[in-house]
Amino acid sequence: MVVCKLVLLLLLLYLFISSLGLLASSFRLLGGKTASSVFQQSAVLGNPVVGLMIGVLVTVLVQSSSTSSSIIVSMVAADFMDVRTAIPIIMGANIGTSVTNTLVSLGQMGNRDEFERAFAGATVHDIFNWMCVLVLLPLEVLTGYLYTLSKAVLAAFQFEHSEEVKIELLSKLTKPFTKRIIQLDKSVLEGWALNDPAYNNATLLRRYCSSVVDANTTEVVTCNHIAAQIPLGDTAIGVMLMVFSLVLLCSCLVAIVKILGSLLKGSVANVIQTVLNADLPYVPWLTGYLAILVGAVMTFLLQSSSIFTSSLTPLVGLGLISVDRVYPLTLGSNLGTTTTALLAALSSEGNRLHPAIQVALVHLFFNMSGILLYYVIPFMRIPVPLAKMMGRTTAKYRWFAVFYMIISFGLFPMMIFAVSLGGPTAIYSVLIPLGMLLFFVILVNVMQAKCPKCLPSCLRSWHWLPLPLRSLQPLDRVFSKLACCCCKTSDQHLYMPPSERYDFDDQAGIQILVHADKNKPSIFSSNETCA
Image 1 (cartoon, rainbow, N blue to C red):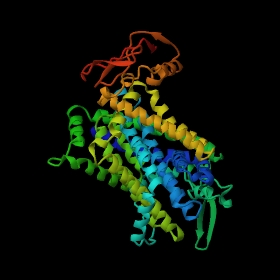
Image 2 (cartoon, rainbow, N blue to C red):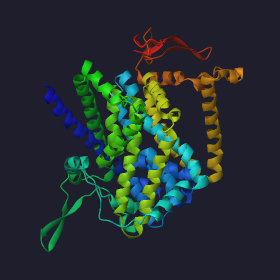
Image 3 (cartoon, rainbow, N blue to C red):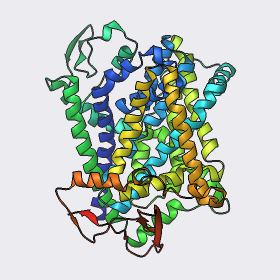
């Protein structure tokens, strides 16, 4: 029975990874032309904030940082943009690629405890990338250190064109399945971005392939994948593929979680959990750096940071890997994906070689700088507690997960891009006040927790603010009414994390600790709950 479960688990994992590839293909079909046309906005790309948001949006649309990076390299090589302009876009691509594992965490929404852990484990990647940008983008604008450092390394080493270097392991196994379903022509994305007239009427879906008849004759025939046989346009096929891949992904994820839950029970789960989260004997401080190395090597072999981090998410949800341990694994994954890009850059030809290598080096140094900032010094590992806070919030308000994804990877970048059309004055008049407000709120919250006596009495709590500005409760009532056919007054309970039990006093504007016993059931009273 155990052997059968293990075989089924491997099959489901294979389909799960394949579904991630199919989902990326569907997004490219739906948003590829839009994403490529965004790069043609040369008038606004010079603004680093705009470039950052374009990088986020494009990578979310094509679901692949390597694809968006290859487009950027092509545009730099063709003199459509310079390396300095490309650097913020590369930073944005780093953020956009983290949306996949956040999407995967939604598969464990049915269990609040698992969802809390899974969402925290997924968003630690998002938070790290956003926090890196908050520090490194202004630093780059002021000093140009990433550009200077990458240029110095490029000059110090004589890089030469080599034959295509490509490491294939997992992709070699999944391609036979995914290629039978769909095949895309990625060169079309570059043609659209470069505004090449030859690609004006091209389709991203590869419908026709060359077939060798004899030594001197070839003919064009319809490709043998399923999508080529469907007489519909790219958009319609993209929608169909997205629905299919999401259903396959969610089904595999739910089944994987259930099988792992049945296999890893009791003492077995405790042993695995202890081993995965244990520190190295005698040198515990080296454990995290070993995890970074493991994450980098695994991502290098898998050739996808999204696949590696998405595979970790359900394990975090099951409690087998802690958020603290998945954090260095995620940082290693960020490094691993840059080495893959560097190898791909070495295979570039002619005038593309040096720009491709410099862009890859910028990506590498950006992630290395992030690790130096937010990991090397233990108290600077801020993304971990922030991710845990996000997990607690989504466990209490499950709608917040979708709300967060729409805001972080959609509405916010789109809003900044729209404001940017008004020029630098408009964008900075919006961003500077927002940044100052965010800094003030964070500073006050830290001081409220660490040294409240240093604050004026009015700032020691947020009770003076209207309830919608200090709590998600009013918004939760709105979503609850929309989601439920009817609501009733009862003594049912809403979820609170097992480690801390609070009640909320709407009049006083404070949270009251009920108890902090992890063994007691979750209780958080509410008068209005859905039937």
